[in-house]
Length: 280
Length: 96
Image (cartoon, rainbow over all chains, first blue to last red; front, side, top):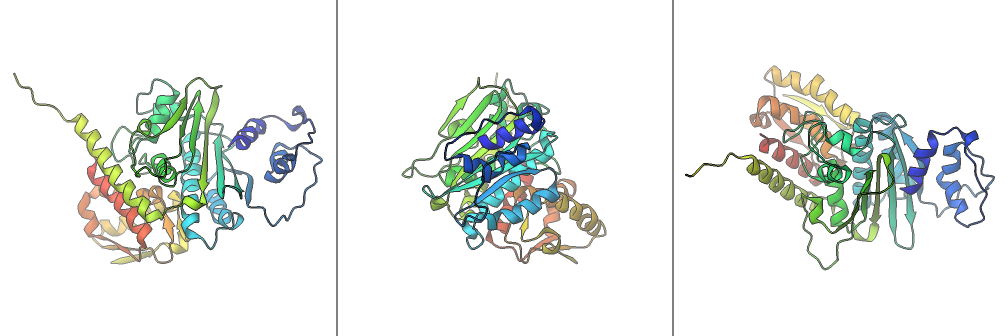
C-alpha cells in the first residue's frame, strides 16, 4: 500500500523535479520490479532479471475506467499464479474489483486507482494496495450522512447499507453501500489485515484470534481494530489488505455469514427509526 | 420469456457494473415492461460481485416491487452467484 501511495504522490510531480538517491539496500530490486521508478519516470539504473520464476507480483498499475478494470482483474490471477486455485482467487478478484470500482465511481481522482500486489512466500500471503488521490471518504460519505471527522466517515463507509449517494436503505440503482463491508468481512473471516487510510484517519482491522468464533460486525468499532485520527493528511483514500492464502475459507461460507449480518444490521437500523408510542 | 446469456458480455467474473446497468436498461426492463418473463443465464460465470448484481436487479425491485422476482429467473447459478443474488434480493426487500 505504501508503494502505491508513493506512486500516487509522485505521479503529480514531473520527473525532472524528482530526485532519486541511489541506494544499496537489497530491496532496491524490489522497487524496480514493482515498477515504482518506471511509474515515476525515473531511470533508476538498477538492472534486474525480468523473468524471475519466483516472481508473483502485480506491478504498479493505473486504472481509470471499467474497461481497464475488467482487463486488470482478468490478468491479475495468472500473475499471482492462482489460475488453478479458485478458492484463493475468488476473494482476491472480489476485493480488487470492488475497491477499484469505488475509486472510479466515488474518488474523483484524476489518476484513477493506483494498484499493486505482491506475494510473500514466507507467510504465504498476498499483499494488495489500492490507492487514490481523490476527494477522500469524508467528502463522499457526508453527501448523505453526518460524519464529524475522517475516522467517523471511514466507520460509516465500512457499515453495510451506508453509501454517500443516498440516505435510503438499499442505496440507489447503482450503489448499495456494501462494498467495503464485504471486504472487511472477507478479511475478518480469513484472518487478514485490512487497513483504510483517508484524510487524517486510519482504521486497521486486526487479525482475529484463530480460537475465536467468527462473528461479523456491522459496526467496525466492534471488530478488533486499531485507529489513528491525527495522521498526516492523505488527499484521497488508501486501502491495504493482506490475504493469507493458508487461511482462505470457502467464499460461499463467507457469503452465508455476510447475508445474515447484513440483514440483521439493516433491520436494526430501521427499527432505530421507528416512531415510538407515547405513554402518558 | 426472453433469455439473456451473461457470459458473452461479462466474462467468467461478472463485476462490470456498467455492463450490468446496460443489460438492465436495454434488455431486462423493456422485456418486463412488455409483460415478458426474463431468464438470466449465468452459465460459465464462476463468480460475481454484490455491486454487479445490485446494478443488474435492484432498480427493478425498487420500481416493480418484490413481485418482479416472480418474473425474473436466475439460471445456471453456482453456489457463490446464487448467494450473492440472495443477499441483494434480501436487502432490497428490507428497504424503507
